[in-house]
Image (tube, rainbow, N blue to C red):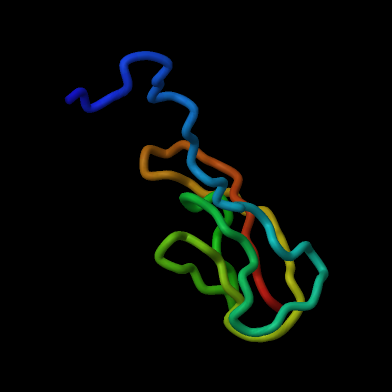
Length: 90
């Protein structure tokens, strides 16, 4: 017996589910302890004060407060610079 249909069979058309990444709480909004602030792949946003980074680079609030976003210039190992957004809970 054949392991696929003789005609009209295709292996295309499948796609993965979206991962719902992005910013979940905006600047100036209140947040509870343990709530997710940002879901991300890699470190596009950096963890500031009272913010923890999970194993999948998700940023969580360490304690309750108000979200603050700020910009910071980071120097890489090769001497080049990049602007990074730092997330903090005040």
